[in-house]
Length: 419
Image: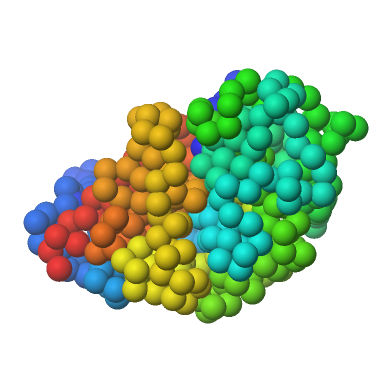
C-alpha cells in the first residue's frame, strides 16, 4: 500500500541472458541483459527466470493481454523457498492495494443496481453519521471516497498497528515474526469485523477517533491516498446492499469472472496454496490479515487475475457486459477530478480507484512481503498484471520492488513490440 513504506520507516529505524563462468571455480555468474528488439515467448520466459536470480527475489507471476487474448501467463521462482515450492499461475498471493480496483468494480455494480450514485452523500447511506472533525460542514460523496479526495486520511501513528494482525497458529520464532510482533506491535488474532474496525475511527468512543483522521479541506478539492477511506467505501456498499462486502464482491465480481480461487476473506484462504510473504529470501513472514480488508486484502491467483484483466481490457473499449453494462465500464474509467488535483508524481487523474497516467489506467499494491501492479492501455489494446511475494514496504527494501517491477515491465513492453 502506498503509505506503508513511509510508515514502516518511521516504525523501524533484457532479451537474452549472458551466462559467464567464473574462472576461479565452477560457480556461474548470471547477468541479465537489456531487452532486445525481438522477443519470443521462450526468450521472455528465460528473461524472467534470470531476473529471479539476478535480483535475488522469491517469486512472481505475469499475465499479458493483447488484442483481447491472453498472450503470456506464467509464474517464476518460489512461493515457498524453504520447501522449493514453485510460484505458478495457481499460487494464491495477496495483492495489497490492487484490491482497491475491486472496490471500484463493486461500487460500479452497486450504482448499476440503483443503490446510490457517485453524487450520493455517504451519510444518506450509512447507519451512523461521519463528521469531518476539522471541517464539520463538509459533505462527503461516494465519488470522494473512490478518488481519495474525501478529506479522510490515514494516520501513520495508528494505521498499521490498528489494522494488521498476525493470524493464529503461525510459526512466530523467526526474525521476521519478531519484527511484526515486537517492532510493529501487531497482535496475534483473526481480523475483527469491518464495522467494528471502522467504529474505532468514526465513533466517538473509538480508540482512534479524533481530528487527525481528517484534513481541513473541502471534499473533492484535495487528494490524499487513504486506506481507511477505502475501507469505509466497503462499508458504504455493505450498508446499501445488505450484504457483507466480501460476499457482495464474490457474487457480483468474482463468480461472473470465474475467479474461483479469489477471496477478500482471509479465513477462506487455503494456506497450502498461498505464497509465503518475504522480507527477503532469507526471512519469511507469518501470514497476516487486516481488519479494514476492502482496501488491501484480496487474495487471488495469476490465473484468476488474467480473467479480471481480460474483462477490464474489453470493458474499457465498451466490448464487455460480463459484470455490468458498457456504460458502467465507461464510468469505472472516467476521470472524476479537476485537472491538477492529483499530485503529478502519482498520477494525472482518477476513475473509480483506477488512476490514469501516460495513456494508461493502472493500480499497484504493496503490503508486508507482497507487491503487485496492473496496467491497461487506455484504448484497451493491451494490459498486464504482476503479482509477487516480494517486499516493497520495509525501509531496507526501499526501491527493490520498483527495480524489479521496472525490469519486468521492460520485458513486457519488448515482448509486446515484437509480437
